[in-house]
Image 1 (cartoon, rainbow, N blue to C red):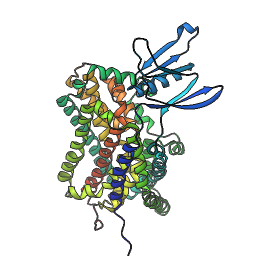
Image 2: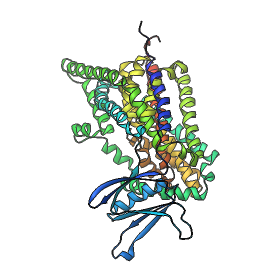
Image 3: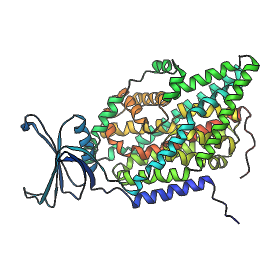
Length: 512
């Protein structure tokens, strides 16, 4: 007799655990880099490790204008970051690395690489298998956009009349805006109580600012001014097909909701055909998710292994108090706020809720993307929590686009943290501005990894905090991004349950 495989969430949890162990075992060497350079006009890769000092020489014209940067054995991240910055200037770069003691002008061995093309981390088995995780995320994204379009059109049309549509739409938006405001407030409160910025020493601050200076300038350069009125205008697509091809989620949501709403006014026979088509398309996408999720444990294993191997947990030591503040805030909001909301606004069991969305939280943590997790969230809410298809199809795609509680909370903590490091005291009025801006920014934040940093720059500028301060938190952002995605997707699911309960559309769920 065949043994039954563990449940999917158990498989994913095991994949997370073994992936982290695998990544920790095959971690990237802290003092090893791969240098790509030209040698006799032939591109060559050389592994450099255990250096006592590395020099990067930017060749100037005339030669007297050469710039030299020096790096110690513990400054690998700064070395890679500085090289990227120099390379963007188009300069010819020479690298000199020295081994042994370098003291009082006495040095042992010295090797020179001319015309350096790249400096990167050494690959390990854990980082090499990341392509398996990338395939998993791509498969989820493959389903996400057609699912959002089909489910929102079917969901909006199946609501029946414009009054019900307006009622559910108002409830959904109100829930998302209020919980986001709660999240930012929790983040600001904890940051003011714990004061993580006061606990960072000057040396660590300067090291982080120099290490991530290049990435910071790139982020600041890609930033766009935030204008709420312009955001509303940009929500309306000129060409819905272009919006679909470019993955413009807000525009897709607007078109799908508008199309579904108007579908209820059309001729019944014709609208029935269209509704059947989009309903069938939504069902097919859900079936595709079932197939894709069989690959989930492998994808999750690869993603976590690569993340742990590349970033490790050392960065947590540098930013320990900042990380504790963000994680504590996410825990309070995820477990406390949503549990309280479920108790007050529905009769739904909190334990049953968190059991039902375990796969959602695990996939959200692994992918760091609300959009990629949306297909899994829709399936779990309908199958495990008993949320009706019409509510699931309307509330969740909207939530994946505009509900970013975890991101908003982290932006609140990050703003106060950076201000504290720079010795700035944010007034009550400034902190209220942070709440307001974070709520608005969360609506315009794309549901993909890392985009919260761009919106953070806008918030920092709105209260006069130096945006260069994001260099302080860039190193740890990927790890915290994984954690705040759990909060984002949990908030979406809790909203679906609460809205469904208010409309008496919680159906019986499958027995475990």
